[in-house]
Image (cartoon, rainbow, N blue to C red):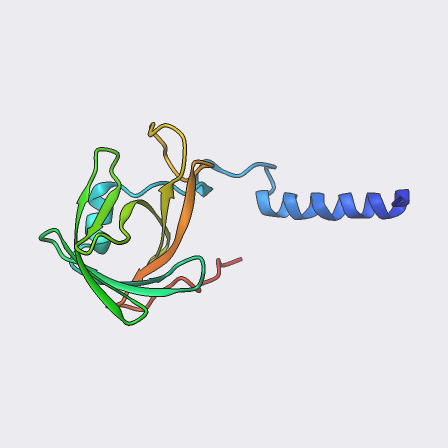
Length: 156
């Protein structure tokens, strides 16, 4: 059993961390919450430009999403062609010619050239302003025609 002194110290430490994370007001500002990019923002950020990324398991990949609806994807030395379109929910959907992989994704901008893409795993496809417990990350990505910023740390 933990003695009272250690427990109070632990709780104080946790409270300090939470307080520091949330800021002086005690709660995160609404602007701190990530929001989904619009279809227009995804088009401007990713279409017609080479991109690369890394999946949550550490696997790197690269893709060119052309403005004419085609995609050229490569991973682990294998290259696949495919197509893309936006669905009614504003997700960017990929379908590859060989029938493997693909899916529909929503995007959040992390920094000037760093994005995170998510897919919905359960629940109704209702309006959502940003990632919630219905979505899982599919990793991060960036445009390769300019320096990536996924490793940037926020200024303090």
